[in-house]
Length: 186
Image 1 (cartoon, rainbow, N blue to C red):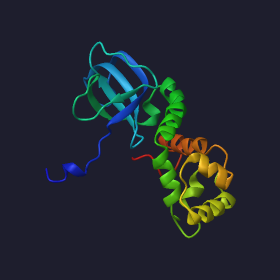
Image 2 (cartoon, rainbow, N blue to C red):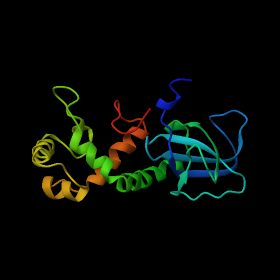
Image 3 (cartoon, one colour):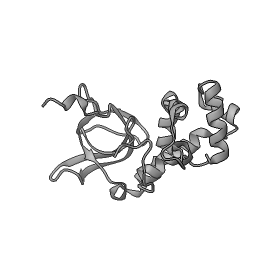
């Protein structure tokens, strides 16, 4: 049991879809209020079993940590994008954008610290909207001073709507369109 502390668990997740009296797709024989949610920290799709008579709203941030859950009986497991409902898929862009906005410091920090992946490609180039031109400006600007916010990035780099670009990349990672993940933990 020595390395259980190393395993990171989500504390919060955002509801993408909820079905009362449904069957789990990850744990055989589990039925009840089945919630499909997106973890806030690791951005993984999760299947959650809600406590009977609880209600869940799409987009709602719910506590799924180890201690003191009020609406969640258990986190059943990770889900594959192909197995979630179309309505859950439709909610992902909105939920991701809200996560990126709420955790601005984390994502700005990523832009401040991202490094080349190979001699030819930089991690920042994997974010939609950032090509060689923006990459050069970002690197020059962050050498002068680290970026403090998305607004700071917009002002100093000229990159419009950085939240949208980050969110788009995360959505592509969640849906499995990318070969390499920058933000979503597999």
